[in-house]
Length: 170
Image (cartoon, rainbow, N blue to C red):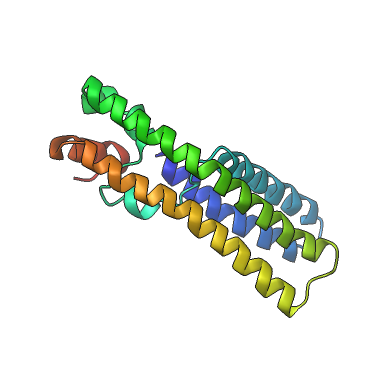
């Protein structure tokens, strides 16, 4: 459920920013506030090394995330070895994703500054977007590859329970 909320928040970030950019009446300040809330949430979650829905494709299709596995450990009936392996996997994921996430946030900030400082032109925007997407793909890859590894720690029965708990499907 948390991944779904994060994915919806990511979509909301884009929507709120677009809404804020196109508001021309008294709703303009509300749009800016909504965009700021979404941007702040994105920065907090990504800054912590979490994926902000970047591994949604994996999670919803039976490749569980380690954080969610640990949240569901009792329901899944994790053995002590499984729990230790999932924690180790999660710690390694965060160790790798945090610095990459910091680069993503820096790249996003540079892109915003281009526009805020009225320095945006075709070449600078193309370069900034390429930098953002390169950083985003590195973070996303860390999370997706971790989901692959987490899946292998669980039994088939545990994967079914996880899928049901997270997505209401088997």
